[in-house]
Each structure stands twice: as structure tokens, then as C-alpha cells.
Length: 313
Image (cartoon, rainbow, N blue to C red):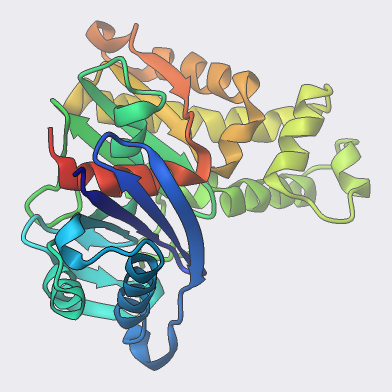
């Protein structure tokens, strides 16, 4: 009988939990709260209890489970060690071993952006390629690198941290990571809004953004598509930095494709084409024709990638 796999995507608010067949079929999915009380010590026990509940529901035992894959918002090593998850309150410890002891099931972990990349590589926007870099643009900017079907971890578990490339000159405020001038500070959803507010304050240019009660990244892109001059300035500024960031990544990894995901990617072809324009201006000539495509799996990508981690190549 085929075994099942759990793919868990641990976020700052909820854990997205998928139960998969070994063939990659999503059998069921739920979300459970990410309880960050007590230094995040409740998160792994909560996941363990959830898994035990699913097994009871499905009339299965741990013998029916091939493994648990888990994506985490921090630097992860292949041996299961997480090198701090600031948003969860975690320090350095072997999260895979802890969850395995709680459940009696083998566990593998990876950085959440790497897991989203692996999911897109498996059955999403990167499924036709052997190597890819995924960039997730939401509250922050994350990155995942897949080479020959395997996620790249790096020596410190920090490979693919494209959001923290120090690209922005003259930045005076600190990024959440503690540095100044990270790509994330201008290209995340919060960074895009921050850039728009700065440009509005520094200019008398007429703009429909001035009458919007709540400016969001979506509003900015919608107004830019509608021809608002200042909104266009904001999107050009943001995409110039994103194009430069992808060009830097191409200079090191030279992937077959870049896959753009996260909430901001909902801006669609307008967004992708702008990034591509500046990418081509900045990148080394040999990588100029690398494709940039939109992700296909949405918020489920991390669950799929975590499950694929158990299946291997």
C-alpha cells in the first residue's frame, strides 16, 4: 500500500498542513495557528498533535507515513538544524530531531522559500526546467535555489537570501535583518508602499494615490496600469532593483528560469515584464535570455515542496 507524506509550511501566523500521496496527490489540507507563546516552544508539539489527529482520522499509524517535510522561516541545514527563526522566537536547535521524537516519524526541514521553490519545481511554474531560482515577494522578499532538482542550502543554510542582497545605496533605515539597504526594503509589499509614501511626500506631482484611503502594493500596481505617473515611477523604481537582484543571482547561479511568487506577483504580466526589462539591462550577456515566469501554486507551494523533500529526486 502507498504511504502518505506530510508537507508542513510553518508561517508566522498559521502552519499550512498538507497530506500527500507518494505520487504527489494532495489528499487534504488544513491550517493550524502558529502559537508563538513561550518562545515558540508550542509550535512543534502543536504540529505533532495535528499529525496524530490526521492519522487517527485516516485510520493509519506512523508505519503508513513515509516522512514529514517542513518549511521554516529561517536558515536551515540539511542535518535538520535551524539557524534561528526570528519570527518564531527560535534560536539554534535541531528542529527535525525534535519533531521526529514527538511523532515517531522521520523529518526533513528546509527554508520556507526553498520549499516553495521546490514545490514550483515539482509541479508548478518551474516543472519544465532542471534549475531555477524562485523569488517570493510578499511581506518580505525570499528566495529559493533549485539545482538539478535539489534545493541549495549553503554552508550556513542561507543560500537564496536574495531579499537581503545589499543593493540599495543611501538607505537610512534598518531592515528587519539589522542591515541597511537590503533589496527587501524596497521590493517587498511593505517596501513598495514605503517607497510610494516617500515619493508622494517628496513630490507635488498629481496622483490618484493621494486620494486613496489605504495604499497597498496592489493599489500602486493597479494605478500604474491605469496610467498614473507617480505610481508608474514607484513600480519602475521597485522593478529596477528587482531586475538588478535577479541579475546578481544569475551571475552566481545561472538558472534556466526565474519563478516569481508571493502576493505581489498577482500584479501579473505588467510586473513580470518590468522586472524582465531591468534584468536584461543589468545581467551578464550570456544569461540575458533567461525566462522570468509567474509561480503557479500560490500559497500551497511550500506544502508541496516540503512533501517533495521527503520523496527526494
